[in-house]
Image (cartoon, rainbow over all chains, first blue to last red; front, top):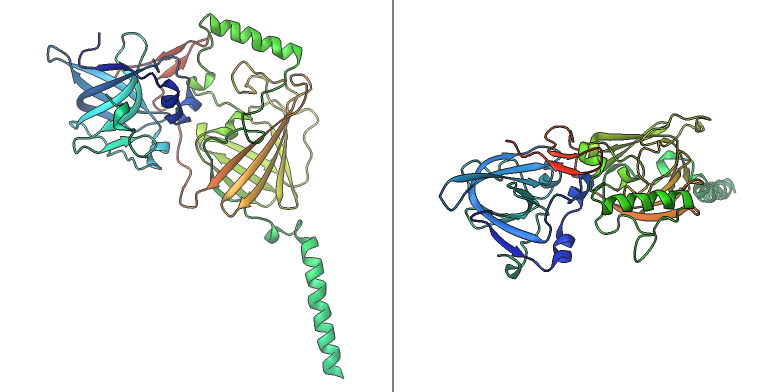
Length: 138
Length: 246
């Protein structure tokens, strides 16, 4: 399984889909992601790739034994994010963060980005808009 | 007496200008609406024939069969992914519906559309030339344009059938696809684009969609090298993959 990952069924799949920016859809489908699942990863940023066609958040998440497991989280392109309040400095190696994702189907440690809560408590979404209601977060 | 004549002559001149000016509007560059700048398709109104749901293509039996075959393959697990996952541009009409901005450049005899997604460029010839009799088939086609009053009309042909008509990869078009786009300002920084697609081989009737774009005077087109760090892939059966080594 995926230790330290809180797994919930959203039940409100269409609401989630509606909130997703369609930009990711422009490059590829969501076939590989389990859009019915939402997972929260708590860990330490290893790398933030500010690249096209997607940004990638690489995060070390400790498992039940305390060993760090690396997850790769796909986000929007820098082109899209830079126009919505992000920069290449938004995430830095060593930052302690909490990332909300739709996980990959299967056992690989990866997912599609939804939002990140930074160490200071501020929340960044891809749209740059307000965070989702607390009731929908785990 | 002379003063009166001058005054009358002056009034006549002003009156004539007032009458002539609107007639010249369609042909004088300075009088045309300024459609230049960086534009982004507004969310939620990407393709719609009007209020309500987007219009579905009305396919000929041959192309309906292609769609049915595609859907059957999807049900078996194939074609979950599109060629765009491999950084292949979508071509027309999909390239005009991307969630990334495009820049319209007006130079003598030509309108150039610089599209951020997949770093694509469309060249619309405004110098009076016609389409080639036997155009090479390309992703974005061959485009000629003219002004119809305040509307920029772009006529495009010569599309490779390698690309999809949309809304999914199962909807195909032929090499006879013909697209007419009408670009018009509806507010200072709002542009409506009405796109009509006909295809005698694939469609039983033309389909029309309207999209709305917003101008962003403070934006620039950014680099988009899809191959830079593309970790998505679509295999020859359209199965989705992802590369997680880092």
